[in-house]
Image (cartoon, rainbow, N blue to C red; front, top):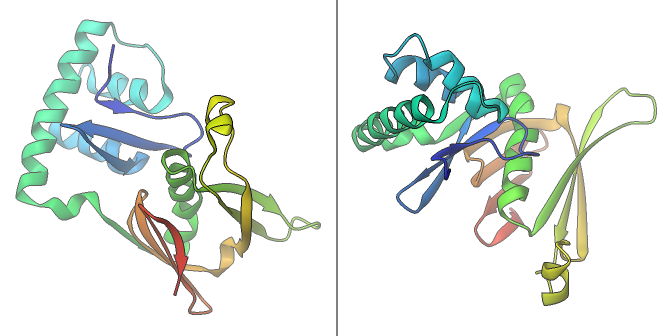
Length: 190
């Protein structure tokens, strides 16, 4: 079964929506709000949302596909009316809450960075470690390995001021004023 909505492992709780050759990424909370708003089948919608978010099989395939199509069609209409619902802007504590899942999702789909969360030696601060990577060689692709790292940036979660965009194309602003762009061509700093 080729699902329209997925929660790839290692993406920190984001949901991908594959619509007509495009991939959109929703936060887990946003996805659950959309299911509540757009799916009228109250008997099954909670199990459907859990199936997608947790990669489980609570619903049988017929119910799952029916609800998936309903949500997809209604979401397409909603996005046609207001495309900005697929873009996020978080500041302060909300930005700090979502940055890890956004970067994990970005690194899942764009193999030009890897992202890890580490802690200071005394557990006083959570650090996001971002490694920029060269494009994979043919041998690395065959071995399912990432390209070799060539740059590393460490950012304290507490320094995250704002994130804007979607997990596949985002702008990260730090309290120091540094701005990082993550997009199709990789990561860049202003």
